[in-house]
Structure formats: C-alpha cells, structure tokens
Image 1 (tube, rainbow, N blue to C red):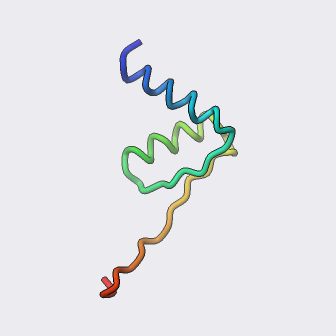
Image 2: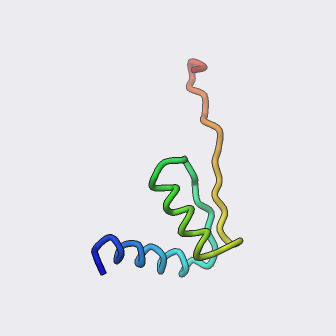
Length: 60
C-alpha cells in the first residue's frame, strides 16, 4: 500500500468514527475529496453544505 492509499484509509477510518458529519463544501479539491469520502462512508448521515459569500464592508 502506497503512502497516498494509507492516508486515504486513515481519513476513511476517521470519518467512520464520527458516525455522522457536516462537511463545509467550498468546491475546491480538499472539500470535494472529504465530501465524497464522507458520503461513501456515512451515506445519508453525511451532508455537504455551502454558504453564500459574505459581502465586504464596502459592498463588493
């Protein structure tokens, strides 16, 4: 088993240990991977959420 496979299995073990999860999903690679693994390991006990960006004080 290579190093990347070991890290993935560690992540899967950690996610399973939670029993349920809410993943803050930004659309980037990291949150995409965690969301996918959470869904695979926890099924309907995993939810990915997004939030609209907060406006800056000057309105942009």
